[in-house]
Amino acid sequence: MAQLQFEGKDIAQAVIGRMDECKDPRFKQVMTSLIKHMHAFAQDVDLKPDEWMNAIEFLTACGKMCDEKRQEFILLSDTLGLSMLVVALDQARGAAALKANPPKLMPTEATVLGPFFWEGAPELPLGADISEGQSGEPCYYHGQVTDTAGKPLAGAIIDVWSGDGEGFYDMQKGDGNTMALRARFRTDANGHYHYWSIKPAYYPVPDDGPVGGMLRRMGRHPNRPGHMHTMLQATGHERLVTHIFVSDSPYIESDAVFGVRESLIATFKSHPSGKAPDGREMKTTFHSALYDFRLVPTSQAA
Image (cartoon, rainbow, N blue to C red; front, side, top):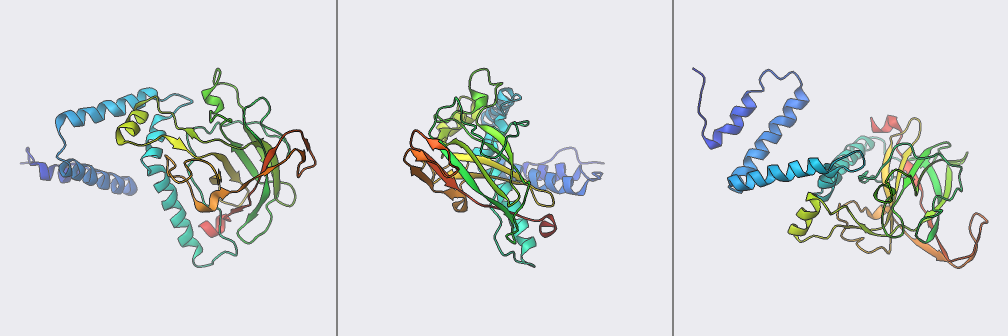
């Protein structure tokens, strides 16, 4: 006769035992570990019924906050450091693959995608200014995209996006349906890129929902240091999702989503009005940020 009743310490193994017919080994591995840790957590903190229900209500509230432009669960993952842990684990796997054949140049580090990526940004010519009509101090971005051997990658796709001078993204402003401060570029024959935008300001992650309430209860601030989101793709190379962080930004040492990497911090140089590096005449002071990206060939990442 099958066992009908289980003691608390035996329930996790009973649940795992019900997966004997699972045909997906990886799914079974992940679920087995999840069940073990979830039950161990409940026992470790002696979870109370009202606390369990509060957690259910919290997750329900997170779901209700989600729509096509806001993903509260990504925000939850980001602020608990899980998103960056997944990025770090993936990066560690890539580093292990490179040990057999160390590259000449170390690949650019990855960081979180964040909740504000928007498919379909306009593709613009190099040198375009995506800051028109937006608040913020003008900034000239330039650099080169190569592989880890230093070979320039011509035609590499670079998607860029950021908040405005007050830290608000286009999705958060107006009707939320008009793109701003985002674009797609392609590198030239020598792998170079250059465009104009603004020097990004620090900003709070959306904190008007359940995740914001969680942060306040934890005694944490919701702020991210200023950064330019950058996603790079080139044929035969691994896609890279990363940021360019502003070196003198507030909260550079306490990013709410733990996404800062020292190698991604760039010096944003200030310049007086006059001729910019691309020959443009600037009537106001402006900034410039030089950053080179190194992509991993797919063969090396295998």
